[in-house]
Image (cartoon, rainbow, N blue to C red):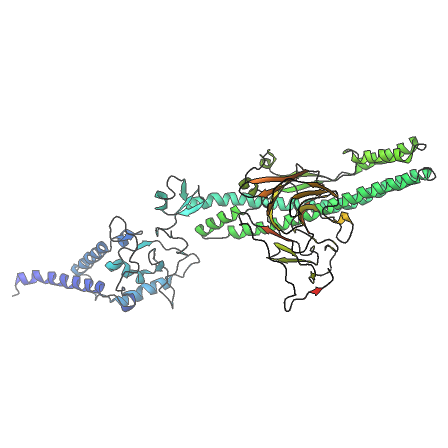
Length: 611
């Protein structure tokens, strides 16, 4: 007969044996999962002296408790006589089972893949902010069981974990600082962003996406309005020509009565009309070119916004949005209204009435009345453009005073290579021009190029609103100013130069003093020497001002004018070794540029001509 005490002790021995088997399984991880001799990050941050920081399920945060629960369940199963006793699985078998289970469910597009599974990718269970690596269930075990990994931070799987982790604190970037417009972690909120308004990144993205959708909708409307304005200008160009032709017929019929005595008056009135026609056509063409440039810029911005809106990464989305917002361009566009019919009818009536009344009068009296009619806004031939912009732009803004104030209106300007005279060399991505006389550069012969005056225009034009750019000047005889696109490029007369016509405004440094030039008239100035010139344009007010840029802004000269077309930055380098460089905001003052080479560089396609 068996001893009862021995029978009672038998289950206990079986339980102890099972516990020993289970515990031994945890102490011998497979070779591919064994921990390193040293922690992966010795300087990983610790939280209040605790051993492991695990953001996840309760079992992952307390691996020992999970092991004890598993042991108790195994013990209950061993005590149940209905269930057969099973042999414990080895670590390799456990890993294979986990990998097979992961393979059964296919990976989705938003799933994070384990970085340690090379041949057959598995779904990651956790990401380690210390290792900056994501692990599946099998490869995560060393982090849960080996004390050397207890100071590592585990979180839910993260895609692009390096970009979504705070570089300073190694915590996930889960918050968005509204004040600084950047993503922060929970420790940043208590340090450099303390007291700032923060919201979860998901909420911040939701807000910004709504704003972005509104801006996209507004952008579509603006682009459509710009394209419609271009179509209007093209139609109005035909209307201008047709209307002017009608008025020319009136002039012809009326001057038949005056051919003998007022032939001179007839010629001059016809010239006035043709001049007004050319002015209207030039204005329409200039506005059309400007609108095409604006539409191209707006479409580019629209593409950037569409690309940004498709970014699935919250942090990357917010960071790119913040950068994009700083460089965001103005989306306003002008509307175009050209009404010539009524004014031309009035012009015709003046011709008819004047013909009847002034047949016996002198030619000079007749011409003065026609000129007076053309100057009258209600009767003259004039293209009227109304600015269609948001209400906030209609508010009266204070005039800029400090350098920072002017930089709010900064425009990125570059030289137009198609306009540069052949003695001018463009470098630094067309942001620096040098007079290399007598060395000529092999530029193609195009209608836009200046042929006799060593001048160059900018690619960008200014139309409506406020604009500002800076240029460094070196050498005597450098001129900086603005002009219309219609300036003559091939002429040798003074009206082809930015100093010699009534639609160009500029300043010159002659080596001793500054001078202002307009309509071939020089105005000496008393300003001291500056190597950097700031040019400020308030198009709507007809204001053009030149400043010396240093620690403070010093006004050199300003013009008051009525701009009828988009205006282009223009530069005349009248002497050898003149240099003008367009600079970015905050760029340090440049040194005087070296003289051009005395002989052409090897392989350069240049030809020497007489100075």
